Image 1: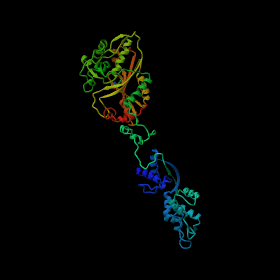
Image 2 (image 1 turned 90 degrees about the horizontal axis):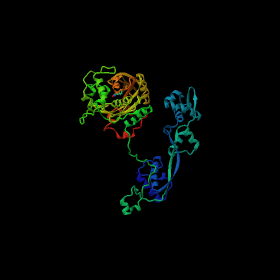
Image 3 (image 1 turned 180 degrees about the horizontal axis):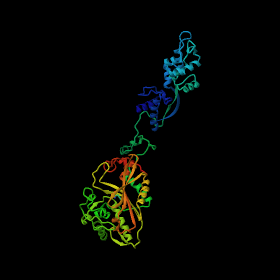
Image 4 (image 1 turned 90 degrees about the vertical axis):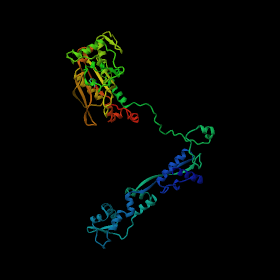
Length: 519
Ligand code: PHE
């Protein structure tokens, strides 16, 4: 259809040299009149396409015409309201006058009301008793005649004023339109050769490029989005949480050791060696190599002693200590393994020692205890059965604050500030149990979308049995908390199945288009 129309325009131009008025074209496939707006819109499409190849040029002419509103169309069929009122009444002296209620019943409320006052004004009807009768034997329904004229010609010979009156009465509306005058362009021809889009080797060798017409570049077109890397939603949220920590003066811990020993993941944290979390069904153990190097000997002894016999005000677990359990290599189940190691380093400074990354002890010059604010966001592993909210690996966000004489109120106050920066303001704390903290608190937040309280994290004051063997001064208290990175990310992006956030079911497009979230 589009090509047929282009061909028609070219053929007509070939015959006439100029098409003065495109409304005179007989358009292929068009059933309505060529002057109709739909037809002229199709013509415009064809003209633009031909003009882009400089085969033609054209000028646009604006038109304004009028069409009937539904009410106007009804009047064309039934007559104006005033004419219908007149027609419903008896001739004076020839019948019973008709009252308002009867008139309404006969021709409808609206027509009776509007028609009655107009018929009066025109002198067509008159009052008799409590009703109305015809005042004249014949009338001429000008409104109906005018509307018929507009319907067939789009305008009125009677002129602007009459048109304005019908518009005011909302019987007609203006419709703007266009038509075109068409001239030949520099590339005029009657054959529409499809322009070439590529310059090919064949065209170069055969020389056909010399006579070929090429499609013009469209510099207005939107480009294809470049395929670049994109941050996974977890990384975006991680970055924002990192920034909150930095803003609050925290230092990032080095959490690059996915493999830890039972000693650093559990023993140093005073997790009993028989704790269920250490069993095979909860923790992944390495088979090759299966055992770790020996930790610093003194510290190892102090940790073993506090488990077996107690100390620092504790009676310990009073169960035999197992070197084997302590040396097992495993995939860390929490980043608290690193927090413990960092606190041990902090304590070493107090003792006047330094420890390098291989655990070698040196001399720090004894510069004593310095308060510390540490955080990490990294991956941990648990032998979980996978479901909509659990994977065998996830990310933990963990914060640790060490200072003299910290209290539980400091921990709670701190978490209120921290979570507020993440946009979470309604917090509740519930007493809980962790082997390495006392007291321990579970953190709940009110979820506005789910309209309920959900658990978002775990926290507490680290136990003396953990801090004592490290050698931290007695009045140094350490509080810590951990949340998962996946939960806030899923809430932010409205994801309810973790398998669509991580793993082969993740939508790459979703990753590329998901916005940064800003807490
Ligand atoms: N390690 C804890 C967990 O796995 C989180 C936590 C960190 C709790 C620090 C208390 C202190 O949930």
